[in-house]
Image (cartoon, rainbow, N blue to C red; front, side):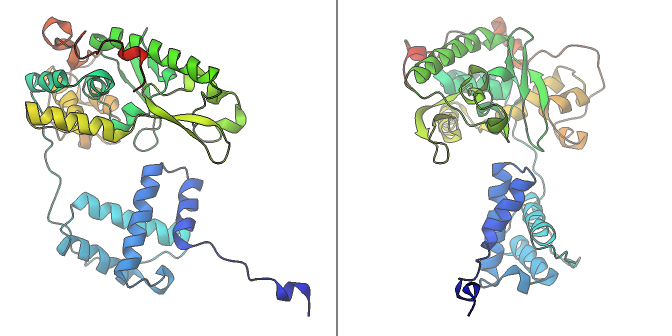
Length: 347
């Protein structure tokens, strides 16, 4: 008997691990990866743990119909599930499927966003303090999504030009948006604190940060450079299992979400994303061109931006953040909510 006859058969990767590998090979974001894996898992469980190779388009259609009629999910959620399953069959299993057109569509269509007035935004922001207030001010003042704000690197903030560069936003696209002049001084102080903390980390043998793509291999020392550090670093460090480097992640989104929820209970109704909606609406009220706002928000289609309102085109002007139109130029925010010694203490 040959030696290879006694060898254990090669194990095929599990389905979800294969899906993850396919998503990473195509450079999808971690959040998109998690969403896709979650829908594949739900699809398999829904059909009694049968492997997708044993199922076809009819089973996909039945699952999507179940989501619309039984689970009552929104149209966008149903579309997300459909995209995940089509990716599974086309890209992972290499078995394109035909999905019947008789899928029940979710009756829950797109909803109009909740938009706060300028006074309501100012009230919410004044309820916040410290780094969470600075993050929330950027969500409104620059129109950032929550994770776009938390994943900013030091090099992405240009105080001199008054610009913020959003790297790999939704759709993996980069864009430039406005940096509110009302918080420029506070942001400059915050970045000096980030520099000080990073120097302390370097002295302790830490100071590493996770880098995008293959940059860590191309530029081995970039992970300890100030330019690549998070603008909003987490309070604790961790040791990366693969490299053994002591790193610092960015501030967790739940920290900001909880703070905003507390402020809302005192001030009215809103979420972190509501501040982004207010950014777009208030710029439209100020007469800015709809396509300019589309670029600032990073919308792929102007139809997405048009949900806020319809305005006449007025181009050729530089963009001024709506935060800068508060009374006094800073909405009473400058100097508020900053605790004594906050820049020198651990979060």
